[in-house]
Structure formats: structure tokens, C-alpha cells
Amino acid sequence: MRLHEYQSKRIFGKYGIPIPKAKTISSASQIKQITEELGTPVILKSQVRVSGRGKAGGIRLARDVKEAEEIAAHLLGMIIKGQPVHKLLVEQVANFQNEYYLAISTDRSMGCPVLIASMPGDVSIDEVASNHPEQVIKIAIDPTIGLSNYQVREAAFGMNLPKKYWTSFSEISFGLWRVFCETDAESAEINPLVIDPDKGFLALDGKLFLDENALFRHIELYDTQEINGEDPLVIEARKFGLNYVKLDGYIGCLVNGAGLAMATMDIIHLFGGKPANFLDIGGGADLDKVKTGLRIVISDRRVRSILINIFGGITHCDIVARGILQIIVEDQPSVPIIVRLVGTNSDEARKMLRGQGLITLSDTMDLAAQTAISVSGETVIIR
Image 1 (cartoon, rainbow, N blue to C red):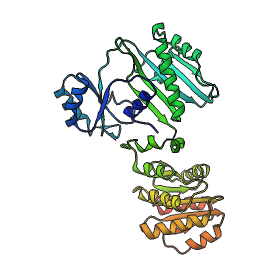
Image 2: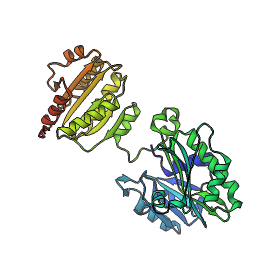
Image 3: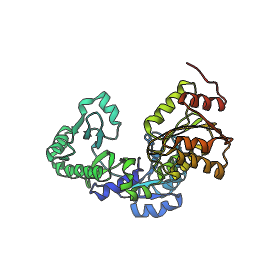
Image 4: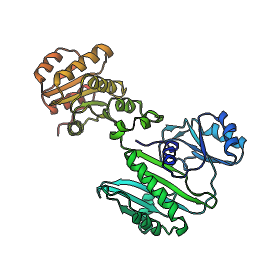
């Protein structure tokens, strides 16, 4: 889960990482008061959780109050890569000389966190790594020991950082390490980290990606997170602990277990269909999770048929059946539902569902997928 820049910087500031003075606004009418507090010129930065907003015109310099008001009115409501701009970060302009890149991220190939540093900054680190790999310093961090002083010095030396800044750089690096660990982040990035001759280091931009599986430990971060730009179905699924990913197809899927969900999507593809989503209700789904998951799938207007594929272990098939029946009564969906239930209490579940007009029971995954494709109006391809 990616936080907005202003949210990331707010967290960075709590850990001693220096950030420019800034305010957030949601209306151009707030500009006059903000510029009186910050002075001019100011930078107005669109708050959307996508990369490349600068190139898309989402970051602008305003030299006076009038220009700031005009820019704010233009940016608010702007669409950047499919995301509407509802909030701006208004920030003091920094006078800086050098730009650097600093991040701590999880490297799955190495199986540990890594400290990544580079000069120059304010560029795509992937492009730098591809075109000038010698400019990227990548240092593995033993998670049982943590970031060490010698590793920070190695990064500072590799960046050609003047020695008079090493102490400040060390404080920022350890602050970023604490952010990474204590927020259960997947990645914490400062790009660029600049040196202002008068103020020293400043984190001009910040990105913080949190591990969604650890959000239960950081309710305060989730509760205060702005969700503008996220699909409302994804937001609803997250509230109930469901794993939901929207795809580009027309067959809704509700499955228990990530492996079975992947296999279900594969078999839909095999017979020429297109799944509309990945939705894993989990291994021990209760009635509420079943109902919420099915309600999310039904609310997707692209869905023409629904395939429910349950292998009952900890999840009881009769609970799933009860959830399906309650949704049919409460929501009165019109989309045909194909159900395959195998495992714990499956016989009882099938008896409960038999005879329901919308529901077609299936004994096998092959038949279930073919039926879901057929009732959606598409042609089944037998390979």
C-alpha cells in the first residue's frame, strides 16, 4: 500500500528526517493563507499515488500568490494516470546544490532488506541501475543485526558525499531504517535527498510502501490514509481482510485459498474465458466474509457470470452455501452463479443450494469453468 507523499514525509519527520516546511490544501481558496505562512515562491505538488506526476504537469512552481491560486485551481480535479487530484502539497522552495537517492527496500532475491544509495537523485533508480550501474550502491542488511555504521559510511563514500555531511547523512539513514522497520514497510525512499547550503539535508520527495498484511499493527496509518484514486471494491475488500485484485475480464471469481484461486483463473483462461477478478476469501472464512466477497463480485458491473470454487477444509461448505443464499435474498442479483463445493460439509451445502434458480452446481472445475463461460455469452474453447 503506497502512501501519499505528504503522509510519507509526515512519518519521515517524526523520525528525524529533515523535510521542507509544507501544508496540504484541498481548495484553491486556502492558498492565500498558506503562502502567508510559507512565503513565496512555493511548489504545488499533486497528491496522487502514481509515478511520473511531474512529467504529467502535476508539479508546478508558483512565484506569487496570484499564480499559486491559478495553479491550484488548475491542478485540483486534474486526472493524472487515471487518478483525480483532490489534495495538493504546498511546499517551500529549497535552494540546493547536489541531489542524491536514498532508500531501504526489501530485496526478495537476496532475502533481506537493502540500503540503496546513488548520486544523482531525482531520477528513476531503475534507469540509473540499467545505464550506469556503477553509480548505484546496494548494501545488504542483516535483519538480525540491523543497519550498521560501517554500511552507512560505505554508502556515503560510494556517493562521493563530502565528509562534513557524513554525520547528518548517518542520522537520516538510521531514521529511514527505523521508519522501514517500525512501519512494516516494503520500501522507504527519499528521492531526491538534497543539500541546502543554509539548511543542510532535506528530503524533497518521499515514498513509503507499507506491507498490507501488517496493517493490523498500524491501524492509525490505515485510518488516516486518504483512499482517493483506489478502486472502491479494493477498499471494501481490505476492510474485511479479503484479498481482491480487479482484472479485465467478465467472469467473477470467489475462491478460498490463493493457490486454488490462481488455478481457477488458469482454467477459465484455458477454456477461452476471462476472469474479472482474483478474490481469495481465505482458509477459514466465516459467513460475513463469504457475503462480503460475493457482494463485491456482484457489484462489479462488468461481471456476466460468477464462479464460486470452494475446497472445504477449515472453511465449511455449508457456511459458504448459507452466505450465497442470504445474498440472493438480500441483494437479489441477476447474474448466474456457478458453484463447485468439495470438502467439509459439501453434501449438506449442495442440498441447500439445489433448486435455486440462479445457481448451477458443478462437480468438476472443468465443467464449472465451461458453464461460467457459456452462461456469460462467450464461446467455450475445448483444447
